[in-house]
Image (cartoon, rainbow, N blue to C red; front, side, top):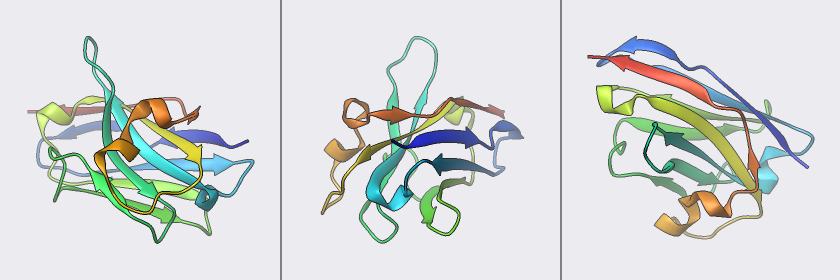
Length: 129
């Protein structure tokens, strides 16, 4: 069973960058579909970006396309979310999550939170305007 530990959040000005890391332990990260989700108080958890193994399909929410990049480093058993050109509306608690398996194509459905069985703790991202 995989355990996930998220880190890298913080306070940044609008237009700045952050890189979130999700370290997996107890299993090989490449045996799982992994994703980043975010949530603000009073709103549903949103799938931000998901990836099926290091060389597999990726999904990005429309709101982050062209600004965020998800990647897996198998040597470090870590999933990264590089976030550039951050906006005030990116402010949220970010979670990494995983489910065992793989997907063949990038569709919205594979970045839906109910699919994910394993969750890390959240990391706060705050973007000041």
